[in-house]
Length: 231
Ligand code: SF4
Ligand code: SF4
Image (tube, rainbow, N blue to C red; front, side, top):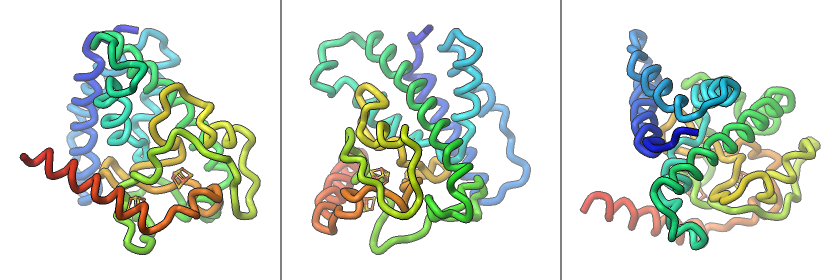
């Protein structure tokens, strides 16, 4: 892996992608994707194997890939992990690049499973066909910040009537990735910073038990972070 510039290349691509997705949502028909392809090409060159590059092209083109959470938690704040705080920038970039690849594998696997299981939105409560016309279903007072899903894992007691694939138990437990900072079932809507649960209708029991008070507490954190960014 050639990770010297990984962090910058990833940040640059996130920004380009956000801008393109924003125009897509606005219904712009003459989208110029030159910068998007160039940014993606530079980023995937951090990876040597053709199979890895191919996987990343597929996954990073997905409108539901959680760019913003990965950017914040798995790249920008990676050095805050107690076990990683002494590492050099180069080592951190290496771990972040590896992590992106691992996340891409799990994201691709979940997407494939959902294509089979999510008929008529029975699992996600959305069709997930990638059209910006399909917006996230609104649930009471939720701003879709996704903070309640910043978990390293939990008991995989899935609910609902659809049997989840065996691998999903491992993903929810947090055994799928090292340094998991948020749930792999958390998807982002068109790089807008709005998140949703891709398995909403069968999500585990502990997710249903999350209450308003905890949400308010997390919202205060979000507001504080935003205020710090402005000042
Ligand atoms: S923390 Fe609250 S506002 Fe944010 S996604 Fe969870 S329920 Fe919604
Ligand atoms: S299963 Fe859904 S609600 Fe539960 S933590 Fe994961 S993304 Fe969030």
